[in-house]
Image (cartoon, rainbow, N blue to C red; front, side, top):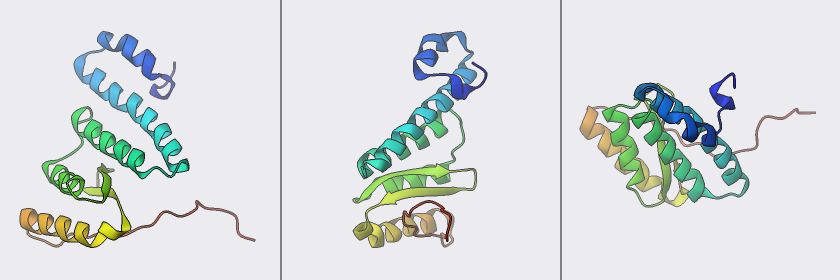
Amino acid sequence: MKTLRDVSLADFLRLREKLPPLLRRRTRHVVTENVRVLQTVAALRAEDPVAIGGRLNESHDSLRDDYDLSSPELDLLVATARSMPGVFGSRMTGRSGSTVSLVRRDALPMFRAAVGNTYRSAFGREPAMFEVRAADGASVIG
């Protein structure tokens, strides 16, 4: 094995106790994130928003708990999103202070209002929110 990408979940579970605690947590995140990515691809192909949302939630929790990358602000936004009816899952994205949430289209107005109110109350400013819709990937035209 040359990279963490080469470490299976079974390998990690078998060898984890040999790692110091911090490295164990970081490695657990990477290995389980690789598994989540593959599970998300399968869920996307199956058009299963519940499974996709579950992987988003797990990814955020792992980034927060194993990789120490979240913040109270991001955790508040994710928790607010997750508490809403019609939200399948939510997580931080990158290190930009942004979140991404998978929301049923009919739940968007209530989602926007609740997340917006939470953000304004906590941080005293308007949030930037963008609605995006899934589409086919890039392709050659012509």
